[in-house]
Image 1 (cartoon, rainbow, N blue to C red):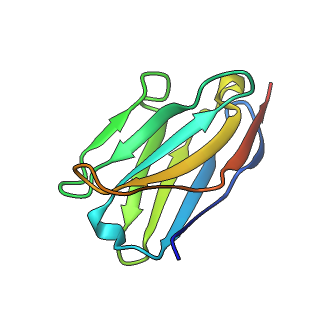
Image 2: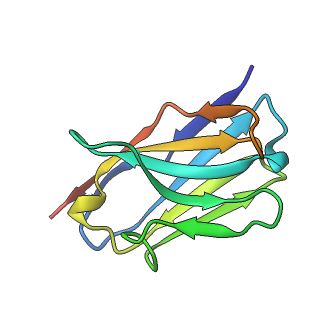
Image 3: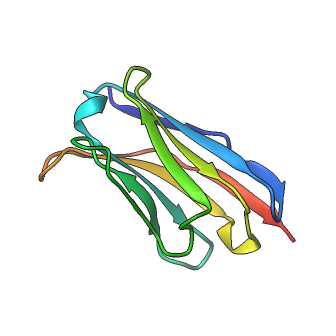
Length: 118
């Protein structure tokens, strides 16, 4: 059974930091591209950061470049999102996503809430 379980969300003041984790099971984690998405109320879900399986190259949304860092530990089947200098506009539900390249299976986590107070 495939599972992606996010954790680490919560309430933080603007300027603060959070580290999200996404623990994967039920598939061969090291073969999957891993991403973080977020969705704020009334807005579409958007890509925050992605790390490829093959070369661990990364891609970030312009809004988070220089503040957020995605990383992965294949031995622990876990992907992380380190979020620094948080802004109120970063508040959203953050979702973990796994994609099997090039056009294979896709899995989503259930999401974790991040709230940033001004």
